[in-house]
Amino acid sequence: MRLTRWLFPALFIASPAAAQSIGSAAAINHINETVTVCGLVASAKVVAQQSVVLAFDYPQPTQRFSVLIQARDRMKFNGRELTMVGHRMCGTGVVKMVDGRAQMIIQDSAQLVPE
Image (cartoon, rainbow, N blue to C red; front, side):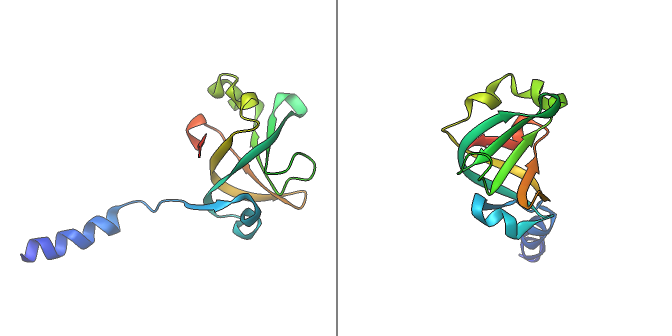
């Protein structure tokens, strides 16, 4: 009984914290936090040096939140990043402020999954 009483709380302490899941409009309130942002991919645009910007819920340039996949990381997506338009996706990572909007840099395909 005593072992169970001490072991059970220890499991919660040792478990890594899961990222909080939020909508794209709320991302602006979580700058420099690790969260999971979910929404409809409204547009995909290839930008400087073949990086890709996925705008969530509103197409560029009116998006409130976007995901940036840098050119060096695009091979990890096998071209799927451009087929996500019209699909609900969730990106997990650190939200940054870029040009007055919330943005997350995704470096691995495991960070961007269907909702």
